[in-house]
Amino acid sequence: MKLIITIITLFLLSVNLQAQVQTDQYQYKIDLLNIENDKVSVSFTPPKNKLKSATFVMPKLVPGYYDAMNFGQHISELKAFDKTGKEIGVAKQDVNTWKIADLEHTVKISYQVEDGWEYLVQNTGGAKSPTSMFKKDSVSIINYNALVGYFQELPKTGYTVTIKKNPDFYASSALPFDHKNDTTDVATAVDYRRLVDAPVMYCKPDTTWLKVGDTKVLVSFYSAAPEKYSKVLADKISSILENQRAYLGGKLPVKDYAFLIYHESIPHNGLMGDGLEHSNSTVCLYGSKNLDRLPQALMRVASHEFFHVLTPLNVHSEEIQEFNFLNPVLSQHFWLYEGMTEYATLHMPVKQHMINLDEFVKSINEKIDGMKKFDDTLSMTLMSKQAIERQDQYMNIYQKGALIGLCLDIRLRELSNGKSGTQDLILALAKKYGPERAFKDDTLFDTITKMTHPEIREFFSKYVEKGNPLPLKESLQKAGLDYDETTATVTIAKSPSKKQVAFRKMWID
Image (cartoon, rainbow, N blue to C red; front, side, top):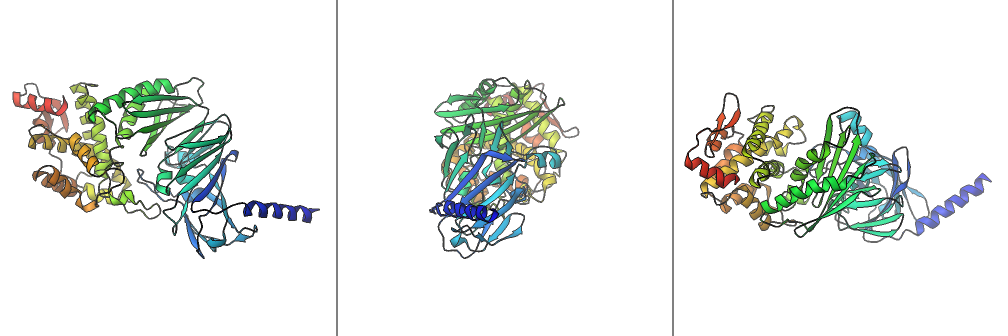
């Protein structure tokens, strides 16, 4: 009897595998209906190929998160099959790669993916937004970089992903879904980079749609708390985006955008938060005792992450455009991608009269205070290139990087008699490049200099490349703000000159 059952099982497996018709795309299946022990079953049919062997890759790193995540560590039971159901040899090479012995005749590869959530909470002090989470019957956050891989030999191939899901769950994502039936969704992407760029959250829907200018914005929220909350958060986000639209000249540079917001109750009164930007979406993770602190906390994160629609979406180097997920070569311009984005997050509220001058000065002081914790002599371009190795210094991108933006903004306005600053520069760069055109990493400073003023090349050389202390006192004085170098504190000048007041007006009014 056991032999008969085995034969039947093998026969059914063979029939199923023969049904797997190979195309020019990766055809993935992700099963969210049968989650066991926080593990999800994943399988795929490789694209048509003539490869005798090939290397399957899970990412070491993902764009926007500059720390090695090694997503292969969560993969287990990886097996390959031919059309008869016979296993094909698989050899694990390291944490993120597997060698498939005969890819040409492989029609199915299957494996298990473990929820990386608990691992990160236990080992890093907080969940990280590039990971995936599987909570059966409640919520799943799918970052494809944690579930889906690619072959080194077939890197620029399209994807079709079929997801089996709870019939009550809704897929919130910037990537369009074809809803085949109540339990089946299908998503497509032209390549791996674009697939990874569009996470999805599955849960019972608590969603609100916004229209900001010509842009449609989805706010999707999950919490175990019983009340619906997306409308409360959407009202806050709407205010931010309307002001960002005005700050960016009246038009947002994307047609569609999605905020995927997850909240988890924690026993203490603190607030844990993390977020990761994508071209057309943001994943925001929060832990708090209750929901009352969430809207205000989201304001700053939403503003920063949404500003990434300019950089790196529309302004980025070749290293970002052709990102190597296994052996990444990092750009030297994270000071631009993160630092300038953070500066815009500080500058926009005061420019749009959402906050007053006192509150703006407080924000500047917070950045100066944060900068004290890091090496102020370290080159920002060097640190950017070495971001993985220099995690001890990386967070200075959000401190000194923002202050570089402040000083650059003031210098540009000084040289142009107030006519243009970093707002105008970033918009001009976005117009010059856009989503599909990358700049060469070592030419950006010269390009910006040609677009602005000869003196700007010296600014980049001194304060970004060489790592000299920023000219905060000299810069802020132009706008009637005093900087005490002994206490490293900014205050509003009591009796600013007419020239200082005029300059301040050009800068923040």
